[in-house]
Length: 100
Image (cartoon, rainbow, N blue to C red; front, side, top):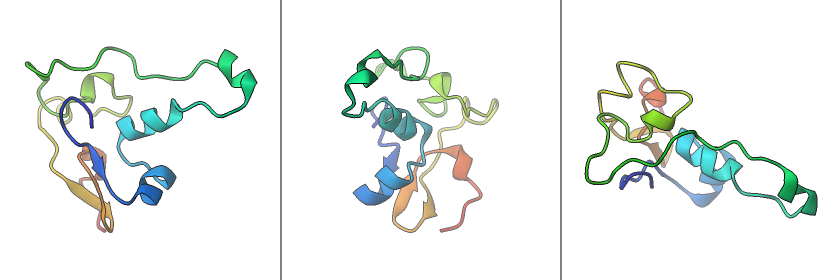
């Protein structure tokens, strides 16, 4: 969930193995592993701040922080739910042409 919207749904194994939405990918990349040396490793995090829930941005709520944002699409139109894999759904314009 990002900015009050569920951005990806699916079986747990599918979400962990193949995260589709850029926010889901960022969340999973932020999980440290158990190696103690990892405490000194910087993690890539999306720039910026989470959106206002009272005044969310137009389009995809993650677009101001998304490294894969498509200008004129992600920042203007809210994505519908796409199903690029069976039972694996995402609100991301990257998958507008995907067929399950």
